[in-house]
Image (cartoon, rainbow, N blue to C red; front, side, top):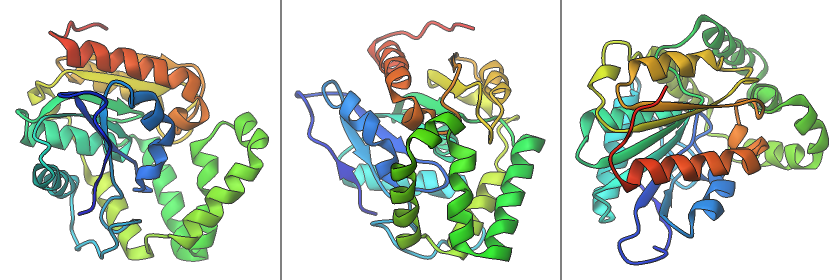
Amino acid sequence: MKLRVGEAPFPGAPVVVMIAGLGGLGGYWLAQQSALGHAYQTVVYDQRGTGENPDALPEGCTLADMARELHQALVIHGVRRYAVLGHALGGLVGMELALAFPEAVSALVIVNGWLSLSAWTRRCFDARERLLLDSGPAAYVAAQPLFLYPPAWAEENQPRLEAEEALHNAHFQGTENLLRRLRALKSADYRKRAASITTPVQLICARDDLLVPWTCSQALQAALPHSQLAVMESGAHACNVAAASLFNPLLLAGLAALVAGPHKETV
């Protein structure tokens, strides 16, 4: 698996591995790479079946499989201790890493994640899956911004949305890959395992997220023994993109607290 490992800003700089959501492309984190680059060595990657790592995902693949593959790739690149920044699916992969490799994961930041799939999020995923199967990839990609961005921000950023749509159509991961990623995502459940995560966790969510209700992060915070929660008033599901100027200070403060020393739990 190809990883894009950035230059360390100084010897011994802590490493932050950034894991995108269902789309799988590392470019999702562009605004965070520039914000983190002065204090952290960043690692981004396109998940298997997407972008620079084209492949067919095996039937029955799980988020645990995705976590093991990423950890193995990091070890090959000489990265043995790292913090994780994950969005939605990426945050759940981060929890899998923390469960399987606690000695490797120094801290975990989960953006708009969940403990188990809510009825509302399942309805959204089911609707998107039907759109993909009934109308095809182009219709699926065209509808994607509805679930990701605040309407006012989207209205002001139409050229960007058009460019993103063209990019995602040109590099679509394939219907079978996307369906298998969706199945892995929908079947993940951490209600019986979250208490075993000893890694300190920063949770960030947006109150206006259409796809994942912000209360899912509340439930996740209650289940994780060493976690704290920051709630953004706006930004929607892709709050790190649509409200990067608000998101990045929360991210930097959270990482600094988690990576620098003993974690103090707050509610």
